[in-house]
Length: 153
Image (cartoon, rainbow, N blue to C red; front, side):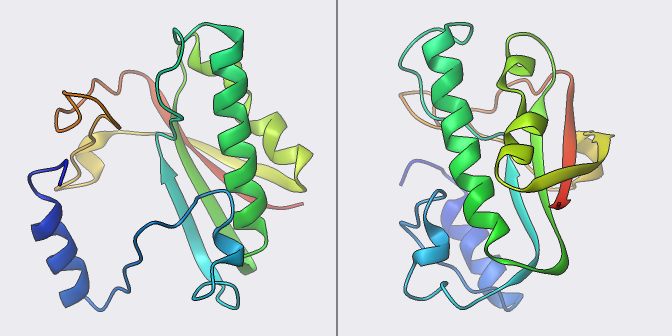
């Protein structure tokens, strides 16, 4: 209901043969009853965000974001096929670089194998959106960012 193209996007995905689930917690999806025995070649999280409780540079806000990413990576680790990859696209400027995603990945038994610049024009039709609030259907400037390619350690 938040996003004007959501229904169209979901329909296109279904027509391509994708299975769609709603209400899946990124931190515990490996225990979801319809996902707990599935494994994947790629698991992608573009611009993870835990909402706005404090300002972006506030240490408690950064810790909240690290906890989100840690839970996501832990769950993703349990759902990867052999030689599978987790891709996390993330802003690299301050204060986003303080999330230390590479370190968080190591803490859950994963390792960074590649880091590539993210260019939105490499993804035709991709339209990033804000997560919440009255402007949630608006795009946000991605700025400097990269995609971290993470494998099992």
